[in-house]
Amino acid sequence: LSMDHFRAPMEKKNVRNSSLPRQKEVERIKPLAMTKKSAPKNTTFSPQRILSDHLDGSGNEIIHVIQTRFMQGQPDLLELGLARLALFEAFCVPSMLSQTNENFIWIIRTDPHLHPVILSKMMDLIEGKNNFLLIG
Image (cartoon, rainbow, N blue to C red; front, side, top):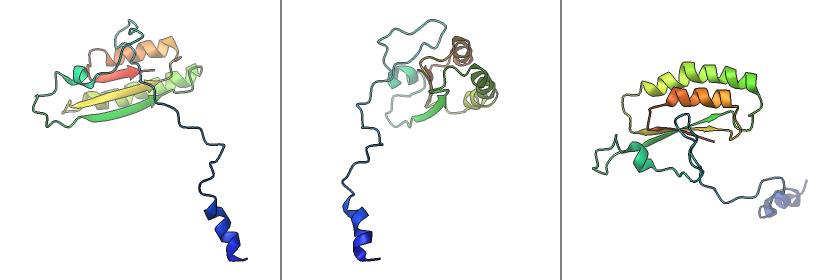
């Protein structure tokens, strides 16, 4: 093999792979209500509002962000969703509730079309925690 055989792929590094998705503008994530009522359509996320009870105002706080994906792209798989919900309830929620430092935001991302039974149970599990955010 000649050196030209090895150079050819390196010279094509500016060629875009058409199978890769184009970069899109990132949309703001709209939170779902943390109670049984729906959040207004234009609700925006405010870390200051969510963590205001946990910050001392010195400006030196570190806020951890924990992100959990739940059934994204799989809203119609009810049996799988219920099984994952049981794991979520048994492991994820107790772990997050037992944190000794509450300077964190837990963002739970779900599919926007998640089955209402699963969504309702998830909202019940995190109800009353102002630093737990369920979005879809």
